[in-house]
Image (cartoon, rainbow, N blue to C red; front, side, top):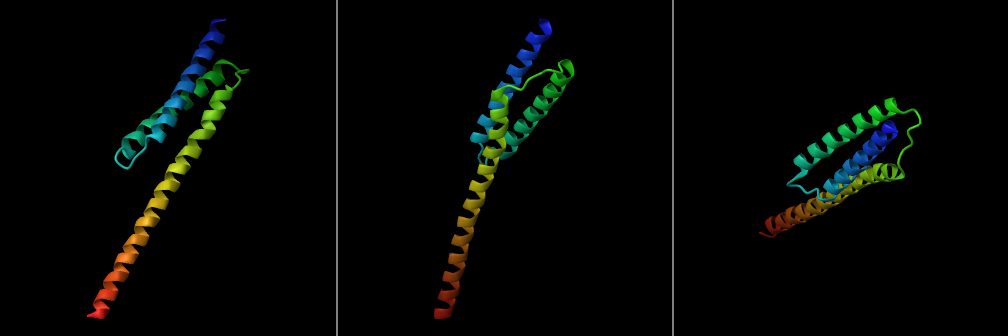
Length: 110
């Protein structure tokens, strides 16, 4: 009975860590990128360690549906953040090209 309870506690800890990682990714900005990424990476390493410990403890360990759901959301969220930043970079690139073209036109008109 104690093994089952400790496994359930570990599952809850993993769920909480995954939720924290997801929240951190949602708050990701250019200013806090390094710290958030380091924190998320450390938490994911802790989750992996706990997952491996639970596999060893119990062969019939069943994954929590919440863990599966959160584990799918995290890479999706990270991909969305990267896509948003790439889109912003494209906008800035277009603005810079426009400014350079304006400079060329100004020089040509002189």
